[in-house]
Image (tube, rainbow, N blue to C red; front, side):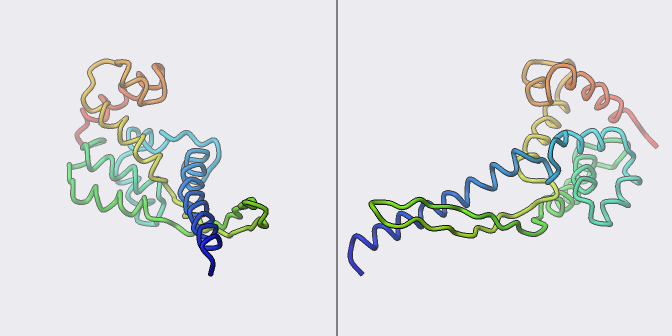
Length: 178
């Protein structure tokens, strides 16, 4: 194989690998948990407003949102849940586990007069995607330390009005004992 062909093949492989890394990020930020226009903080709102016994049934059945909400409750001791970091980590792992793949066509234009090519790239699909999980966890961590809504809490939790509503729900959820 000539050096030019090897360089072209390497360039195409780099483009495909880059596309495979970028496409899941674009899909995960465009949709939260695979549902378009879903409020990414809905899982946090579920953790703040529902008792662990109600979420636990759905989590055991495999509902990713319920698994992640239960993980938040166990991590922070919300809604009367006993704090248990080990179980919280296990429920988080289950919620973030890929739940299949979606095949996406990736078009690579021709370079230097060579023909273009198309590739099929498998993109993992998540019940709760890692980007959404990181944003929700950042909001939860800031709420756990906040007494009032600060700019950092507001920017992490969906704006000032949503942050205030979630902070009030957080304070109510941490003062419960069943």
